[in-house]
Length: 271
Image 1 (tube, rainbow, N blue to C red):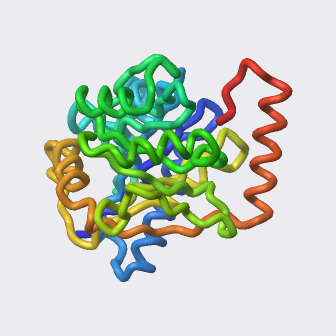
Image 2: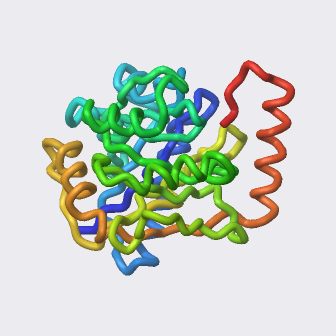
């Protein structure tokens, strides 16, 4: 049984949840087919990385259903979403945090709460790890360059860090190669990547379209969180990536729209 994971998902308030889940099922199935797995021979997992002020996981727990989809808790930080056709997805709770150097850190499988820009990168990663989340530092447009790249490289060269992973991002365009970072050997560490939908029209359809998979693995249906945690921490080297970077036109349109929104609505978070 293969396991496909989109490790960076947002469910913004304007997103139609049922349509997002429908799209995720199709995107996972497409990726599984390309990797040689038939329909029904894989598990699909969406790891939420909710920004400050987002609470989709909690709302879905309370809502229990959305159109064709029904939600049932598996464990504290996992929801099973199942539609009337019997298609299932696992939704994992998590947070997208920001260090005081303005570097993103995801707290996956447990939504650790830390005030925005309250801690430097090293302390933020340590806090997430200590409180039970899996720390992931995702690539972002302009976020691994200049002074922030120096901060990241300094952290990667430390020898006493807790377990953490870097991540590629579905918003990275094809012409922008994933950076080589001194102090981090991807052949020995791996990436836990995700689609990272933006708060723009139609972006909910990208859920499940970019991420990682284990060709062989099994989730404990009674405690998905801990079995997925074990896979990530013990078998990160076995992760394989799937999905395509954004094309040139889509990338520039999305970035111009996001930046224009930031200028017009300075108090609203668009990214």
